[in-house]
Length: 232
Length: 247
Ligand code: HEM
Ligand code: SF4
Ligand code: FES
Image 1 (spheres, protein in one colour):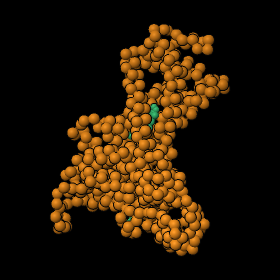
Image 2 (image 1 turned 90 degrees about the horizontal axis):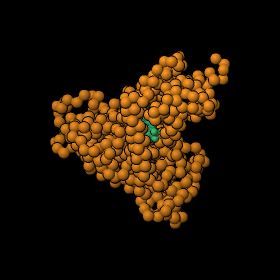
Image 3 (image 1 turned 180 degrees about the horizontal axis):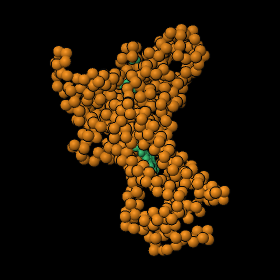
Image 4 (image 1 turned 30 degrees about the vertical axis):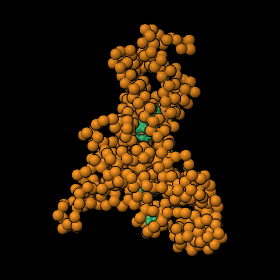
């Protein structure tokens, strides 16, 4: 088998595909979990408690970090090679070819926005939850209010009462939507499970998955913002 | 019809090129694009200027020699044709037409609009063949091949090796070309035998020559003069990964 995962183009693409698929599955899980916050703070906090500083949650987090790292590192590697293959001299006139999505040509830019959003997200939540527990503390004070590290619902309500956070998350989710609208069918094509008959179906499914994931997350963000305005 | 042509002029591989603007007048709408270029060159020769170098051979869409990136499209704005099959009626009278050579690191410019596409030949030499003699034409149905397989193989075999796929791809990837060659042979029993070796050898050569990595944008199939589908890229991925996993 040798090391085709790092010395062949298709092998490298396989790593992109599998790491991407893993991240998609994680996001589906994370999004479903967040939906619980819409219905009951207790239920949501029970899940947060379950995913605190336990060995399995910490192990899961480490696997996720590895997944993001591999996906990101390979994305940079592939993109640098691709720019080199394209050459110094570019076309004076360019067009968008028929049937080519904007997202498919801007995967790296979208990914960088996703990484940026992820950093902010980890500061908002992870550093106030799992990290607090890992440090052996039992509460954290944000803007003069004390939160338990398992009070995910409280943190959500606080974070999304600020309009600028809502804006950041919506931009982040929009970038994710574009990335997934191409990525979700692209990962199937990369492993070779696609054909002419299935392209329209796969692209449709891709849009669905992207909309489900990003819509689900956005719903929670917007729900808590409206709630903070005190009109419901 | 009259046209203003913005053409890339470059003395040789080492020189720096630039766009020069020319005018052609009184062009009949049924003139082919290459004939229009001939008319321009005729004018240039009469004026004592250096004619524009461009590749061409069969002028009937089968050799793959003609290239040119015309108004942002490989082989011009018409779909599923080579430049020699493109007619001036496709353009508006008085239009400015920008003509560039293929731009891809693996296809360096030799002169004006001519690029070196020998990288594709090298990929082909790495495995785009079968190593046994198949002899002369066998009796019909002697080797059973389903109609669907024969059709798919023929669709892939339509590739003329023009290079438009890599020239169009933002990643400078040659996947559509390699996929077409691997696919056309993989679908027939004569080619099937060496399928795994072929996929590995051709992909290795493609990578070695510095072509980029496919990100499935699909721009290649939109610009391919033979409408080769990326369904063949999926098959190449399958063939390659299966071969590597078996090793
Ligand atoms: C960390 C920041 C990220 C960067 C820099 C990034 C970058 C990229 C790049 C450059 C590609 C290759 C383009 C292509 O294959 O079409 C790609 C593909 C992909 N990405 Fe990301 N991405 C990031 C995050 C994510 C996340 C969070 C997910 C999942 C939710 C994801 C899912 C995918 C999928 C499924 C593919 C398609 C794989 C394939 O084509 O085989 N990416 N990404
Ligand atoms: S696949 Fe199409 S664009 Fe690429 S070399 Fe063959 S005929 Fe030309
Ligand atoms: S000159 Fe042969 S394909 Fe155009």
